[in-house]
Length: 225
Ligand code: MG
Image 1: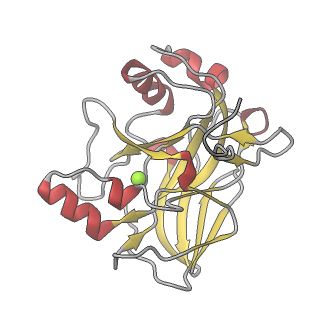
Image 2: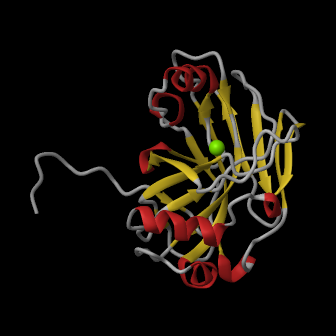
């Protein structure tokens, strides 16, 4: 096949002893952990947005500070990698038939642009889908980790704890979230789910070192440049 120009290379994540995992799309789940003030409770259905695969930033990289913002904020999220897709996926089949493995991700957010978009009812892409806005660790295949339904999730900036929670506290659990997404659109092998972030956070600045962890998974270390 000849193309008008060379097609973009496939974005991949390392996956321990497996071959590299080709990323197709990134689904980010919103408001999926309870807030201390009770402001966030389980919604009737999950809310989500999509980042393109090209926003993946590999572990141990420098994230160039994006232009036009003063509020670059990291959100630590457990990432679920699917190696099987479909429509109307039964929730009770998700954990072992559809989940390839797990990783640690950062849903990087430009809080000032997001607040402006929310206020005016405008789309979120400027705030959420900018270059390098989806740092992600290597994937731990499920045959090593087992099914992960609980475990500490934390974010540190320059060694200082900013976010701390447990993935067991997710309001929409992974099987129900995958089922829900597959009723809205067809899912495909290579799709990633960023499963939401615990309370806390705040902006980072140039030179900061972000360490994002989920118990049992490879830590994600990103430096702001
Ligand atoms: Mg998020």
